Length: 170
Ligand SMILES: [Zn+2]
Image 1 (cartoon, rainbow, N blue to C red):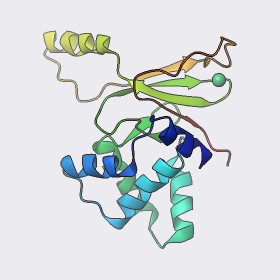
Image 2: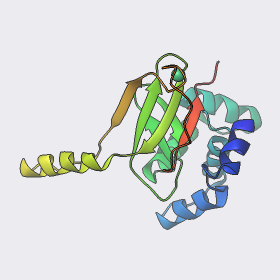
Image 3: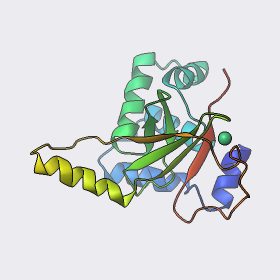
Image 4: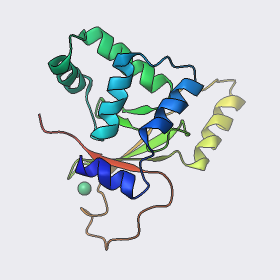
């Protein structure tokens, strides 16, 4: 909760309503389960695994595991949560208005941060296009050490939208 409050207070995580509106704009029907999933990611911005999410939701309702997995896919399809493929987990996106993200993953403390996809990635699309290849998915995930672990001096928070989360201990 404290993470979410801090993120919202710093302006880093938009209000829940912004995510609901973005999903609706992209054609998502807000079923009670999808909404509950979104609320969970928004209130607890940790890097959720499908199993952990399912276990949490099953505690409070009779949702079937397959329904939860489908719900996660629905939120991913409209880019409200982003998959972190290397961790096989999901993270809420820091800006519901954007659809392409890259991930910075700290292999020391477990920090996972989403940042907007670098503009240079457009070159990948262009390269693929010259080969007649149509890109439907592009994943950029960097593994290394976060600023704190690399012992750098603290700096001002980035200006672009961001979200930082930890892998929950389970
Ligand atoms: Zn770290």
